Image 1: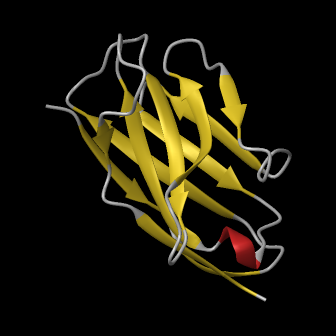
Image 2: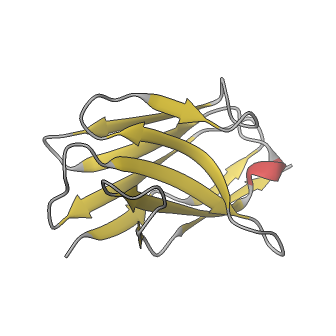
Length: 119
């Protein structure tokens, strides 16, 4: 069974950077897609970024384009989210998720990691 474990959250000042990690265990199909989502207090969980596991094809929400970068390290079975130029509105719990083939929705979720950006 696949498990996802996020780490790297914390408190950072506006304009700062953080790198989130998502360790993947249990093995996944090479055609899987890995994503990052976030949920701010009182709001719904929203898409942030995703990458194909094998080819590294990426996509981003408009709100983070140019500031966040998703990447993966196949040897370490880890997905990263590099977050630069952080803003207070980036404050949220960030979740890692897996979309296995042939599904169109994300099926496995991590427990989340808190990111707080102070102004």
